[in-house]
Amino acid sequence: MKVSILQFPGTNCEYDTQYAFEQLGASTEIIWHKSESIPADTNLLVVAGGFSYGDYLRSGAIAKFSPVMKAVTAYANKGGKVLGICNGFQVLTEAGLLPGALKRNDGLHFISKHHSLKVENNDNIFLEKLNNGDIVNIPIAHHDGNYFIDADGLKELEDNNQILLRYTDKNGKIKNPNGSVDSIAGVCNKEKNVFGLMPHPERAMESILGSDDGIAMLEGFLEA
Amino acid sequence: MKAIINVSLKAGVLDSQGKAVHHALDSLHFNGVDDVRVGKQIILKLKETDKDKAMKNVTQMCEDLLANTVIEDYEIELV
Image 1: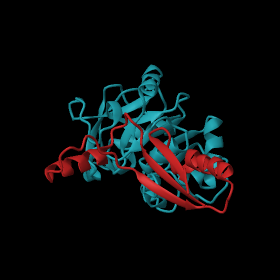
Image 2 (image 1 turned 135 degrees about the horizontal axis):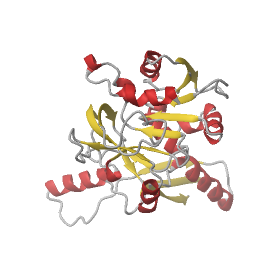
Image 3 (image 1 turned 90 degrees about the vertical axis):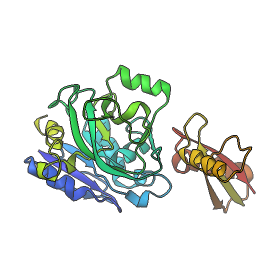
Image 4 (image 1 turned 30 degrees about the horizontal axis):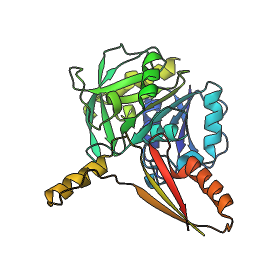
């Protein structure tokens, strides 16, 4: 299992992501954004979190034109598995690989804390280790995590089981930290090979650090 | 020629910053403000001298990079 992790100027979660996947037994490689290709033996491509290009203009807006993104799009269109975490999710929506967009949090504050999430659809490789309705405790850390999609787009997401996770309290009751439409924390594309979420499963790998619920999430990719 | 581009959230997309500014204006007793939208202005200095060509170019720039048309509208003024 080989996980390739993208690194833009301003990315800061690439080493956490590398640590997380290596803990699970995968081999990893960090790919600088100037690369025009991704390693041929890649089984999973991760667009890691951070602040690519300082979030200038809009989060993820400039990263989508980095040289490596052509290869990412080609990889995704061939059915390759892509996971965008936090800024990676923003990059994938900007690049048109995932539907919707991420706006400034409703409260206008940067939010950094553990948050409960409810698994909405596990019929995909990302969440197949979990059951629908499971509650996981995963850190969030974002300023622009307010997911927006119009009414038609939302219906399409629902009809195709593309909503992966919703923000809730620990009992599974909707609790929306940032104003996201329908409290959505993560989505996938229709083909279910491109995944994006604002929370950071790679930061929930050790119970001593607050939660190890990220293990079950990321493990899904390894068994695929 | 200059292109002045105003980018703002689409009608129907909640503008949290606009709401916060509106609230602040109310607190300062500036009454009579119905709505506040906060956007950004991008000013380009262009080499192009033909207005039609400039408009076409700048429109493409907005579609590709300067605005995210999922959530934002843009207006271009050439001066």
